[in-house]
Image (cartoon, rainbow, N blue to C red; front, top):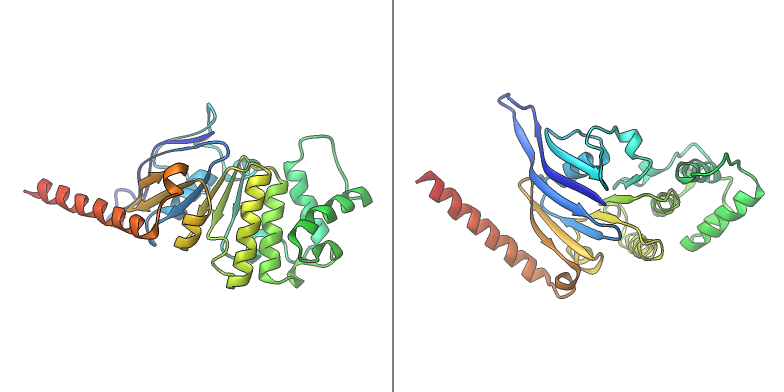
Length: 263
């Protein structure tokens, strides 16, 4: 569905501060994939997301949606089909607006039909969607979202992202700022929505248990490269020990290669 071909992202190119954050990234994101993305800080995960979302334009390479070249397409255009949820629960909703207004704006984003307006029928629809969260928000349509807890706002953000019918949903450590109880709620909702709506999802996480438990595919990044891309069947039998072992083996091979080049 979305393909990245030979993507390179270099900051401050040609200066003493030059930094190549992504190196020759080739990645096919297939419809229905749920890809967990892991890697240490500075591995290139967020830069990869910024390139996919259109926040950054790559220094080299191409990005395709199906057969359409979207490499130069701006972020606000891609936002119509690429959803993104950040670590901070406050970023996905407008706190000074009511819950129903937040949901209406989001619904219009994913609606491809004639003009729609907020009415009782629409409110009933919103209530039916909110009931799935099991947080009582269906009874708070007129409350401003700033009154909700972080867990409630992140659950709402996730629901609204699903309602906008994205071709791809990017989850950028979307449970990292939550307490364990709320993080578990959000992860359960993430899996439910992904399964119920056959979503295509990429999820950055530093939680190795989440990386193994959730999703159908696992990618590990290091030094701006995707060094592991593990499919569903293999991932189902993978352990944390095996992931760490593979990472160490790859790093050893890189060190040996560098030593050979230096000789």
